Image 1 (cartoon, rainbow, N blue to C red):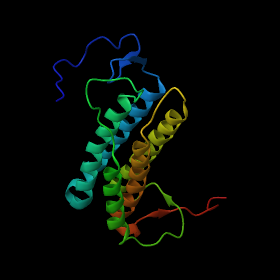
Image 2 (cartoon, one colour):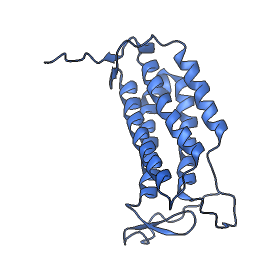
Image 3 (tube, rainbow, N blue to C red):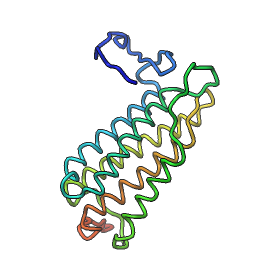
Length: 193
């Protein structure tokens, strides 16, 4: 159980933060950047949910589950699997979480009008917020891929799959809240030449 009695500890005043293993890392460290960007994507989803809570309750419930999972992903990233004993079982993203997001994508995608062009970020306020969350989730994914490529680090492959699928979900959800794609703003190549 998480217990937060005091918000400031002054331990990060030197530019470091503690991982779940107790190890101190610079706040600019790739791992810290990755889980910080996952948190940023989560905050963007929170903004989107301001718009979906009343108008799209099914999508809002899906987003709520994803927000909780993103905290799981942050916890996963904050405890590197370096093979050293921890004294506890760290929280890891598992395949069933990705499977659930795929089912949600399939449910929303079945009613969408087919795309004939790329979609510009916009349309309804909910769609714009979901597109923003999608782009931040993609940045988190890029950071996690970089982390996985570092031979000194480890990134859970299920976590990588999960964040990739969340980005896909956010795209489909943005189209769904845009009147199932009818209100999408489409890219017109060379329109303003």
